[in-house]
Image (cartoon, rainbow, N blue to C red; front, side, top):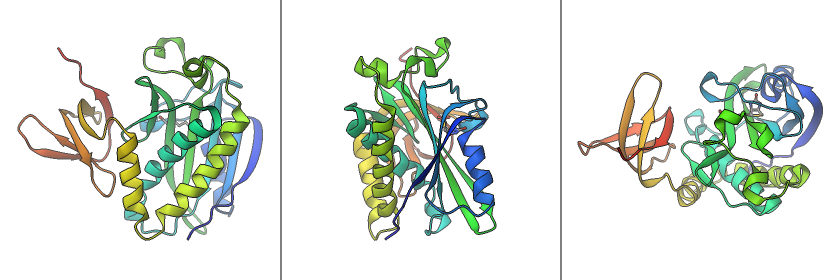
Amino acid sequence: MTLLKPRVLRFESLPSTNTELARLASEGAAEGLAIVADEQTAGRGRLQRTWSSPKGAGLYFSILLRPGIPQEHWPLITFMAALAVGDALQEGSGLETDIKWPNDLLSGERKICGILAEAIETPNGKAVILGIGINLTDEAFPAELTNVATSVAEALGRTPAREAILDALLRALSRWYSLLSESGGREKIVASWSARSSYAMGKAVQVSNGDEMWQGITSGVEPDGALRLRTESGEIKLVRAGDVSVRSSN
Ligand code: BTN
């Protein structure tokens, strides 16, 4: 069993907790090293997007993983991270969330947390920088995103305690990460993810990967985390990268 022993470094301000942790990883930092910053000046999101990170408005967190599992299973790292954030929000603030494939946490159909896992080469082997950004208050995201983003404060009607969520996140990550390397653990992760995601089955969605767009009904996830999409022709398309959105009815 892989035991994760998180050790947290705190910063007032960083360009990006992922970038700083990648630098420390390349100098040989051990698995479990984690970084929290009060603000990020160059926060990064998936698909080369920026991640708005004003001071005190979000939890900006990264943790270094050196997974001892075959690389073909690494896509499930973001699944286990989404499960851990779901637990952390529940335990740390009482908020129930949904998961949108592959790893956005939603509250009331709006995004409350994003996850960015980056695989890097280091002198001690390949590693993963797992970055997590949780919107604690509405100041975390620009006003023009109000229709697609939300925060823990908005969902609960009170400002959440960042430290309680962070403590719960460290515990939850340790639990779910251990499972990843246990016999039968990957199946449990995929099953738990599917049970917690309203997007796993029967949702009318469109998926875009930047170049192409597909429409269909979600039809579960593969053991490696790929989303199964049943298109209008009845064909099952396996989606491994892209953005999923609920299909508008017109
Ligand atoms: C997404 O696009 O949904 C992923 C957003 C990930 C943001 C987090 S905040 C902490 C860490 N540092 C970064 O620069 N990005 C991640």
